[in-house]
Image (cartoon, rainbow, N blue to C red; front, side, top):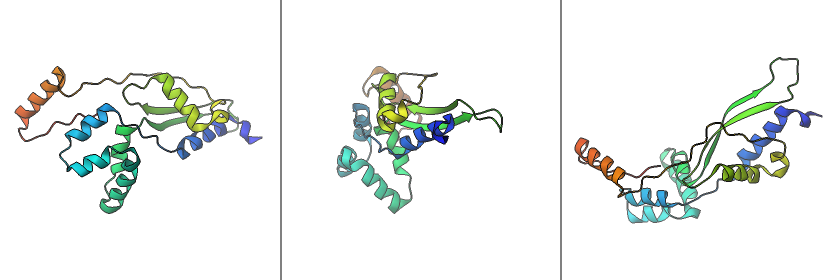
Length: 171
């Protein structure tokens, strides 16, 4: 049966991952960024509402052809992008293993265990039980809050270089 092939198991994993809805998370770092934006208050109000972020961004995309969703998603969600898929070494041999590399970027405060749990939830236990998760370059996100010494130093240097520029606390 084809469903026993390692490559098909990873295809099932990718399809399940692709079909799940993005989980929107509004954290303090995102709120700092929205507060610093030079936009009207109503725009800030909308950008701070979980239920409005994606629908409004999609509407703006339709009206402006600007890819706003791709810009906003990393601010309000962990991102997962498949980058490498490997299986087999010879065209007439069915590989017992297959590998996929995912580029995963997490929001501040999210741990590796949270990511594994999130992946299992997104793809379902049946699919998740057929794959192994392994990390090879995990880095915990860091934060430099507005008003901190480092943030103020960046602000001061920016003002010297570009006096009219506005510093945004971006992630």
